[in-house]
Length: 522
Image (tube, rainbow, N blue to C red; front, side, top):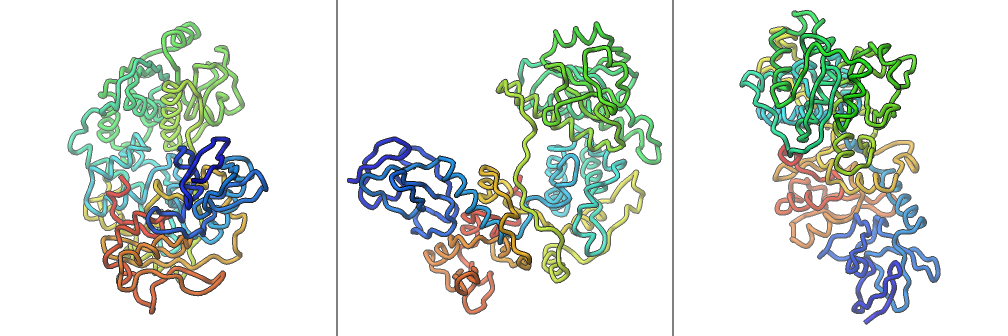
């Protein structure tokens, strides 16, 4: 047996035990990317570095055997900085987007490519489920939104952007046509939230807070809900569409009090009676000057991450912060605030809506258009033959959704490179090359796509295809800095992964090998 210390804990392990195995026996987490149990050591990513405090030496814990008298540190500043640098070196060659550009510029951050895939597959029920994760009023916004997301669509480099807003409206219309059922609450809590204002921001906050199980009461100064939506012309936003979508929210155990004027006394009473008060009062903020709130020249002042005002239990969203014609921004803020409040209620910690690391590579080069068209169609943008207010027919929606280039990652939640880059604050461009690798897409059995530009050369696919005795499999090709993962004898990826396609995709630590099935992302 070998005696050593790890993070000041003494342990004995059998000779030949790696430091990684020893640490895990103590439930100490050390990150890995190139390591896979049962496939031997490889030591390429250097993310698992630890330090021997006796001599300051850094070493890869996945392959270094435990030795007598070692005093290992796994989590000090030097270890963390070394892991960060290792990740940044991996990112320097990684060509891929964690999230598609259209999703990144959408003020509500909706998963647009996944919606497109579901519509193209005819799965309307799942498509609207994906939309409503981020947008509470999709039928309305599908008609009135100026579509900032389409400005980010890579398809416009080829011809015209995908008609995202009409597709969103189509998915919503399919649900409305069936008669929307009440929102199912995930749980039921004893928390109560008062929302002043039933415009887009207030309605979105109410939708998501109600879904989380909290009791929501809306106070609206007018006789109807909708706020500025009520001023939109019928030929742009049909009344029946707006009323149906608003009813789907308001008929879901949400109480609304119309013709409610909130003066100073009423405002103070709400703060006493509710766990949180949300101001979604639109651009008319002058009336709040005498109620203890700090105001700016644009509107109510809030913390930019939590939407909290100068009063602890009071929050503000939408045009109350600054005038804007983008209803989708107000709707997005309503969703974010609901998350903030839900976390606050559950943990007593007030923190901002989470943001994640996002790998980005910029514009496509012209030779890469053909690679992305492998998962798309070479067709021009479809127009709604019945007009935007009525929207796409099913045939038009499916045809337009198929134009999506699918430039998002298919493994956005399970990608270790993204998760660890987020954890260690890695900077993608610290060691960036002047010219990036050219993007290619190849396809394997079992609906697997291989994008070598995302590969970090961890060798897991090489070891697995050897272990399972693929006829060709993957191999390291080239030497030194020019080494890459490829298929011997210039064979296809389809030939390389005849037996192990799904397995190597499951074990790939990035999105280099991934399933194209939409179900994998739901």
